[in-house]
Image 1 (tube, rainbow, N blue to C red):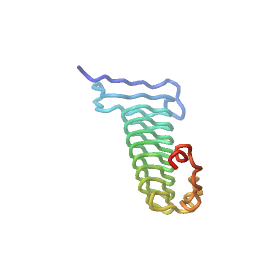
Image 2 (tube, helix red, strand yellow):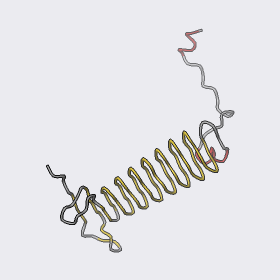
Image 3 (cartoon, rainbow, N blue to C red):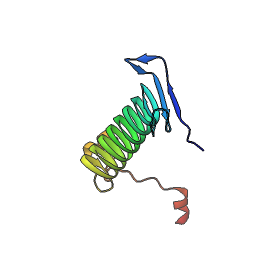
Image 4 (cartoon, rainbow, N blue to C red):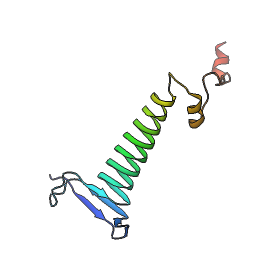
Length: 147
C-alpha cells in the first residue's frame, strides 16, 4: 500500500507566500521523500512559516518534534521563548532547560529555577517563591484524624 501524499497551497498570497500550505508524505511526482510546507501558516513533515507545525518546524511560532523559532514548543526546541523536553533559548522551560532564564528539572543558564538552584531573579521572571518563602499548607482533615 503506497503512502498517502497530501499537498495544498492556498491561492491567496502575502508577500509571495501562500496563506496556508500543507505538505505531508512523500511525493513521487517531485521526488520529495518528506513534505515541505512553506507558507504563512504551514503544516507538514517539514514546515516553514510565520506559524509552522510539523515534525521539523521553523518560524515565528514553531511547534514540532524539532522546532526552531521565536516562540517554540517541541520535543527539542530552540528559540526566544521555549517550552520543550529539551529547551534551549532566551527563556526556557523544560525537562532540560538551557537559557538566559531557565526553568526545569535540569536547568543551566544565567538565572535558573531547578531542584538544585533557585535564583531570585529567575523566580521573579517565572513567578514563584524560594524554599524559605514557601508557606506551610494548613493541616488537612486526614492529618487531624491521624493524631
